[in-house]
Length: 219
Image (cartoon, rainbow, N blue to C red; front, side, top):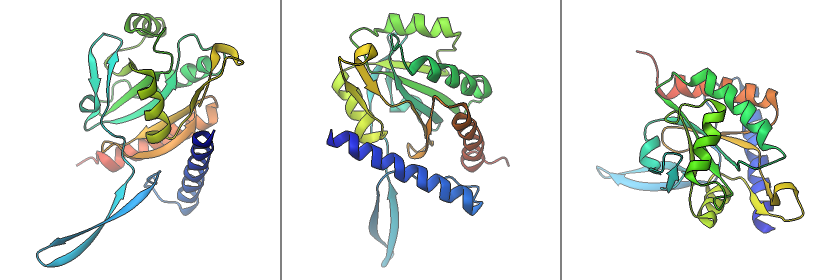
């Protein structure tokens, strides 16, 4: 319960930062999550750097039964989410909206989508493969991964700032966030959006453009 409350607070901070950024008219997206300060000495001078929240290293199995790690998103902007294939509630809405993002950026070499199943017992690589094929996906552009359940839950809660909780009283037996998380090429979170609301996904699409322009400026 405490983890859920902390995540809610993190999301509220993220939303506030996004609102501030837009009201300021800035073209640069905020960095979400906790920030620390690092002091180092170079050539006898003290230099202070901001160290932003970073998605840690990870290792899962994708829909092609191949190990998928942080190295596979290295140097790319990506949108992450958490779902399960038998979800009867918000997941169909999420996948409808994520398809919009996929269609918009499927030809961009600097962009990927990374979906994590939160029901790995059922969602084996073959199940994810069939699920993706039914959506008409390019597996290289939109990766779906499975693995150890507790590691996936921990990554979601502690790193992506979203929740997933087993609840046998709820449809599908799991309660989880419908968030889409925008991550930059350095694995910093730059935006969190409600993936069940078309207008919020419109904002995500606009912010992807901003982030692409920031991190891959045209020469």
